[in-house]
Image 1 (cartoon, rainbow, N blue to C red):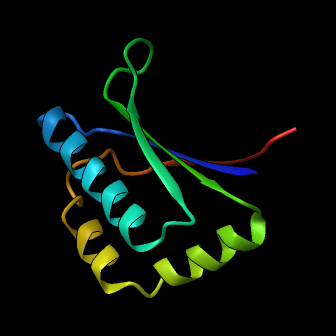
Image 2: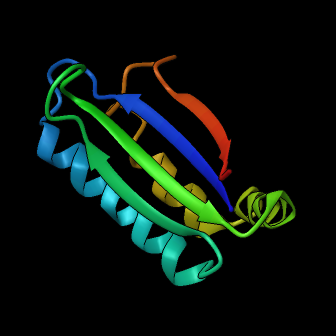
Length: 101
């Protein structure tokens, strides 16, 4: 199994619940359209409070690459991304790819 992890910090002055709701909408969209990408959303309770995390599990890297390619041309996905232009600190997004052992 492969796990993709993305995190981003919410922008100063943005209502955190609004950013969380948006993050959940993105995960729900991905889960409904791409069932091979089980996506969950988490928030930090300690540490970098205001950080949102997405975790997506895939069978293998080939599946991750295929879904990523489909997302890159998915107009609905890009419409959702367009709603978040002011929700997160620019440059705070971090991606990590992990493999189960």
